[in-house]
Length: 124
Image 1 (cartoon, rainbow, N blue to C red):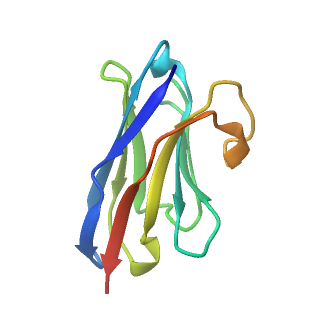
Image 2: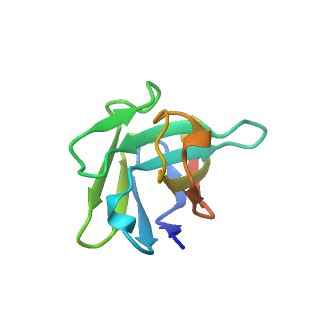
Image 3: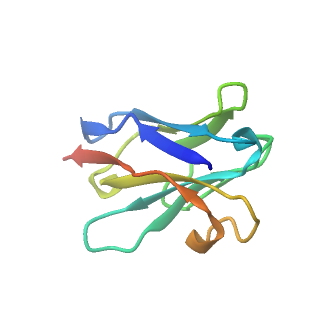
């Protein structure tokens, strides 16, 4: 059983930074490609950033490119999302997930193990 637990969310002002973390536990948890999605009220869950199992490949949604950075520490089974220059439109619940069986990196259905989410609220 693989478990993902997010932390680091909170209430910040526009222009501030936050760093989200996702702790992955379970057998071979450090070998899964990982992703961050987010879901704002009334919206569908949307792709934010993906990182390969080695950490050498990263992919970002256009809306966060240049502001957000995804990284991982496989020794600690942890994935991070550094969010800079936050905007009110970044307000959402942020979820991390592990990809066990492959698929498109930007597709929600490609991920098998999801965390419960952490709330990020950016005030203007």
